[in-house]
Length: 248
Image (tube, rainbow, N blue to C red; front, side, top):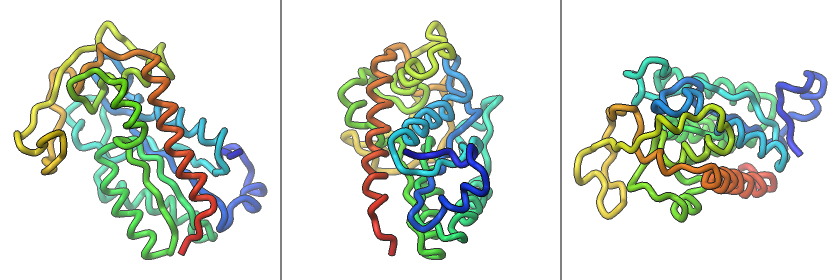
């Protein structure tokens, strides 16, 4: 139903890009540490797989993935790239404005990160106020979370953990080194979370020995299949409603 903009000509683009178009902009780290067992491009592979499914199922125009963004927790790990939040926001803004100035009013950023989420939410509000456009931003923590809650066995997690490792075992098993998978947890200030609810945000870096937070040893491809399909279903549900939504 959808297309990737990079695969069509300028002539075709002139007829496809208008106020009814939904532009999907994927943003995810192309080179960011994910422990000893997952590739640096894990986030990028996950988001690109999701966008492939969205193109198959939704009436969208998908842009090429932005693979460098704001990932401050990983700057001490060689191979990891983080762009400053200000540069990241300006860069993303310029991409969206490039389409808004020609009349496109509906956008969805498929955000594959956690640290990128708050800057993108601020940007979405600023773009709406400045240009009268609607910019949705997916929440990587919320996507597929109901399925994760049923499947995951780890004590806690969040990075290169049971969930991410399962997803990669499903979509890119040849890049996963399960013999290097471990269980380890990042420590924080007690009281920031209480009764399973986040009460206070505390900034910090990934400090575990292998650079993961969770139990990657519990991962399976079947868990990954269910989680990935749930993430796609969540986004499809939103896009189907965005298509008929009147931007005001």
